[in-house]
Length: 166
Image (cartoon, rainbow, N blue to C red; front, side):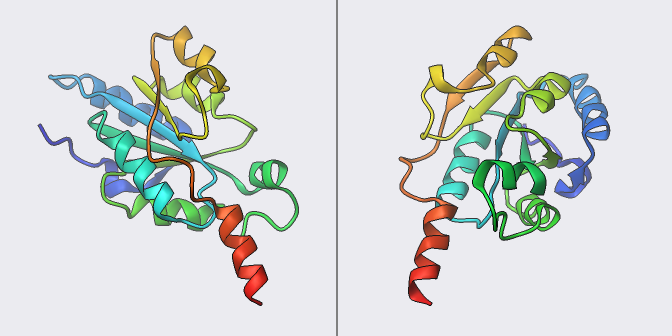
């Protein structure tokens, strides 16, 4: 069954998205909710493959995007290149992405606690034992999956290449 996109894949506030998912979970059959997260600073093919692989595991894909402040803390000065609101809008326009939510913090633990997705997908730069949110996901009965292709693409690498060409 094809699940309808929530508000045409718009960007949601966390509380509003939690309400959307509650209503969606009352549907029969119950859809499998998948959450993927990241900075998504400069969108590249690795991001697309990661999100497609995550979406293939469920019926409704939520993408949690680091806000500007947490992106700076994680990647350093000069990052992000693209503001969080724009990154969220771009991701919400991708086929297969049903909802996008911004979050602060080093990890997506708060988003996971609130939304309680069935699956939490991380990229291949992680191993199941190294996923920082794994204990939170397990605490509510969710599962962690590693998806996407081998980590050969990174926004940091793109930025470095652009800098060398200048």
